[in-house]
Amino acid sequence: MITQVYFWIFSLVAMLTALGVLLSRHPIHAALCLIGTMVSLAGIYSLIASPFVATLQILVYAGAIIMLLVFVIMVLNSAKDEHTPRWDLTASIAVVPAIAVGAFLLMVIEKANVLQPFGLGPADAPAARGTVEALSKILFPDKLGAWSFLFLVVGLLLLSAIVGAVLLAKRHLDTPPETTTSHHGGH
Amino acid sequence: MDPLEPIQLQVLAVILFTIGLATVLTRRNLFFVLMGVELMLNAANLSFLSWSRTFPGAAGLEGQIAPIFSIAVAAAEACVGLAMLLSVFRSRESLDTDAFDGMKE
Image (cartoon, rainbow over all chains, first blue to last red; front, side, top):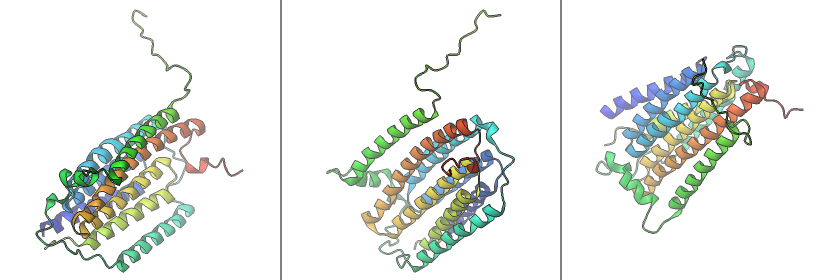
C-alpha cells in the first residue's frame, strides 16, 4: 500500500515536471524541471528494487548531465530567443505524431502478455535485488563475458567524447589559450 | 504480494517518452531538443528496469545492467551535444533550429 502511495507521488511529480520541460519559456526553467523528473524517477527506481541504478541516476543525471546543461545555458545567457514563438501551427501539427507514437507504444504494451510478474514470489522480491554486489556478479563474472567487454568500450566512448567535446568547443586549436595577463602594479 | 503492477510503470514510461518526443518535435530552441532527448532516454531506462523486475532471477537482473550503459552513453551524448551546440551558436549566432537550414540549397 505504501509503495502505491510513493509511486503515485513520484509519478505525478515526474509527469508534471516533464510537462514543465515541454511548456516552459526559458531553458533554465526547463533544466530545473528536468532535475525534478530525474530525482523522482530515481525514487521510482528504488521502489522497484534497483537501488544501484537509482544512485547512478542521481549522481550522473541530476548531478553531472543537468549541471553541465545549466552551465552551458548560463554561458549562453544571451541565447534566449524571443522572436521565435513557442507555439505556432507547425508546432501544433508536430504534436500529432508524438501522440500517435505514444498511442502505438500503449497498444504494444497492452498486447504484451508478460506483464504479469511471474516467478517473482513474495520472498523473491526484496529491495536487495539490484544491489551493487548482485549487479557486479553479472558485469564481472569469473570468466569475463560480453558485459565486461562492453564496460571497457564505454570507457573508450567516454574518453573519445571528452576529446571530441574539447575539439568542438575550442575556438582555434593551433593558437595558445588566451592568457589573462595579471595587472599587478598597473594603476 | 507485490503491490506495484508492471503496467503502471510501463504506462508512466510511455507518457514520459511521449512528452520527450513532443519536446523534441515542437520546440525550436536547441536546448529544449537536447532536454527532450534526455527525457526519452530516461523513459527507456524506466522501461528497462520495469521489465527487469518482471522477469525472474538472474535473467531479469541483466535488465538492470542495460540502464547503466544507457546512462553512460547519455553522459557522452550530452557532453558532445553541448559542445556542438556551443560551436554551432558561434557560427550562426542563433539557437533556433530554423536557422540551421544550410543543407537545403
